[in-house]
Amino acid sequence: MKALVLAAGRGERMRPLTDSVPKPLLTVAGTPLIVWHLERLAGIGVREVVINTSWLAEQFEPVLGDGGQWGLQLRYSYEGPEALETGGGMLHALDLLGHEKPFIAVNGDVWSDFDPALLPPEPQGEAHLVLVDNPVHHPEGDFSLSDTGLLSSDGANRLTFAGIGIYRPSLLAPWRNVIHVTGNATDNQPPRFKLAPLLRAAMTRGEVTGEHHRGRWTDVGTPQRLAELDASLSRSGPDAGMAR
Picture 1 (spheres, one colour):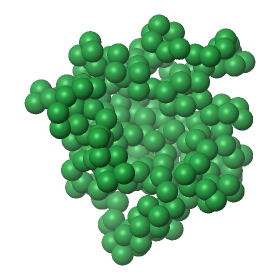
Picture 2 (cartoon, one colour):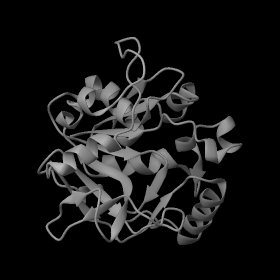
Picture 3 (tube, one colour):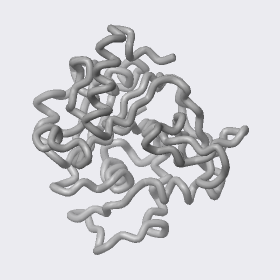
Picture 4 (cartoon, one colour):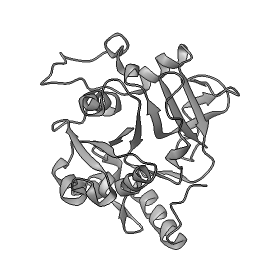
């Protein structure tokens, strides 16, 4: 199985740190955020990882190389000077990920002790997402998880999407019918759009499942949360990243 690490965003809320370093390359406990993901993916047998890039894209390869140090083959999906958002970035990376087999995708700016080996080999429908308890900064949550494991965009007891999931490429197939894109999307100007509308459309068809991860998770969206995570992991020692 291949994997995608979403790493193209500008990281506006992390400024001034992200003025000179892309957010996924910021370090916690001495390790870049993105490397925590690469190590976990390599640990479950993933061998090919695509990293989408835009802001300060030239910094990734000097730090990560070709992935050989983790037993990975890294490929970079450069989106141009303006990031294509989660949906556009995923669509743009499909030529590297493949158009037929499911793939894992992880937001490069989150940290979690979730073990990706717990993901199903493939989703029952179009996607399977990992959800977490709502953090203080996002109390309303994103999606509701039913007793049968189906996700919906409405409902009680909403949880927050962790930025970790497994997807079928076919999830993206109806993007022209679901997404309103300003301008003309071409090979030289790919579309820029969020993934959430496609997920919600698939949810209405009962094609998105999920699971509730009750372990550690942080959306590293501000310098304060980065500092808090760094302090916590530095205190925890070498087993900090082990999944619960």
